[in-house]
Image 1 (cartoon, rainbow, N blue to C red):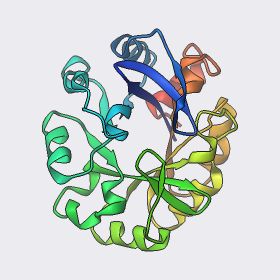
Image 2: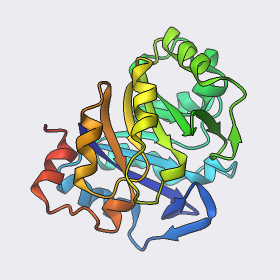
Image 3: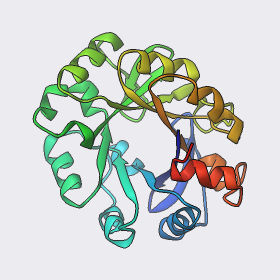
Image 4: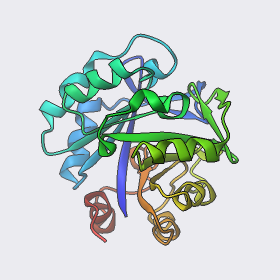
Length: 237
């Protein structure tokens, strides 16, 4: 089980949104580069980046482009507004390890031919229903049909967010993670982490390989000085 720090950027700043709502935003004084350096020094090996401007249909932020070069020791996965094949190809060409997006939900055939390990399907669930477009719109497809389409194309990695728990510190959505893992995906669970102990039940779910954390790390609910947190960041069992 690997703990994966999440950085959400909105209007050029680090931010956390409650339930994905831009009207419920908390901005942080940390610079993205400064926070990434702290995380890398604490042992992080993978970083999850979200371009919220892109997710809400606004112009993409250019500062993402340089991060793989600034931190070559890290694996970056990036999402937010990657709604066509050209946008995905562009991000991968910049040196990002993988892209995370809902194009896999809306038009999975558009991803045909891409290496399976470079795509992390963003499966954002409200109950058992997938949502898209910054969590504002329910998918027109049944979840089971989306799962089948992705797996048939060789895309077996998924970032699963329980939308109702994101940014709440109520603990990750085990039910959502288990639902997707049972379909055959390697799951990164996201939304609601509040303590190191939250990783224990997730680690017991077959197919759950990681847990995303944003608010808990940035606001010190889990400490980068904790040896167990450092081990989790490095992916050491």
